[in-house]
Image (tube, rainbow, N blue to C red):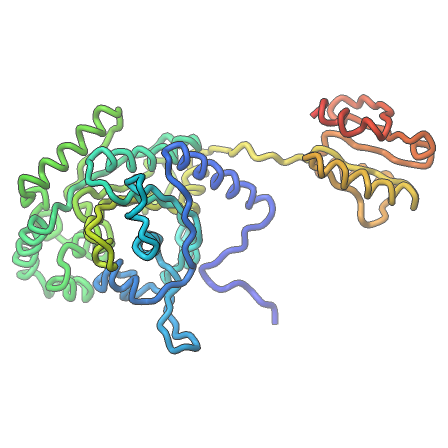
Length: 422
């Protein structure tokens, strides 16, 4: 029986991993430019973390988590998203006590959700995300959205749209919640089973339903913006003012609610307008979560963050026909002819690698012509030929493949020669 990877997973092979490495390096460098530091949390956590942090009424907790009981009879879940784990770590290690606040963190790592696999949506996928904890300044909301947009722009994407909304504070959400219950109660039996359950538990989630999105009641549902109290309304206005002065375009969508229970005040998504990207245009999303830290046992601490899927980012690059500048060549290839030359070649390869030069050699005892073909396939910039004559003279023949020029170089100056050329 031939073994295959589990459904919803993928192998990233050489030729593809280089793209991932390039994108991840760009994201890490961008994060540090905004003064966000990397955090790495466990791939699995206690299930209760996501039940409390993400919310019992979310599709993630109800339908999509990979949960199992370990040998200690503990319920463990592979992390379905990054924010709850970061906030748990923030509380556990008392990062709120550090002198420099807010605490600004970023992460890159695999997440797991049991859902129907489709292009850009896998059961194991990789998220990049940032979290800013400890500030209730609307300016940091704008900073996080600016960072999210810049992540795509740095890689050359242009067909982008920032969509924002306010979910208000607790008082605003409670007033809106009651209005939603009254609005949808009259059509409850026409809604899907999930939305019928959400009506009492979390009616805001009905607005995010993919099954009922075209139901007429969705078009007439009361807007959260109509129920914002003065504080929430002023906060949202300040966020928009910061985006305006930063030159960031946006669209306000009163139906944007996001899929996680912990959001309040600012919510946002970045979408792709690229032709051929697909029906699901959302690239990333995030928002403010002022109550999450205290829900997980920490002090009252405001927070805001976002996450993006690396898979969907790469899809967007493909939709806009953007090629990444991936290096597909190596610096040198050493061709050795004879047993003594092979021994010397191993020493040369080791020496060059220690000096930062990318170099390889033959390990299959190929003839000289076949070794040159291997060098061509690897797009080697230089080929170093070492035979009996070269050994006798303590030198190596160095051929520059682009020009065809060839020189004999003494072994004791070979490293300096190649460094000057490269």
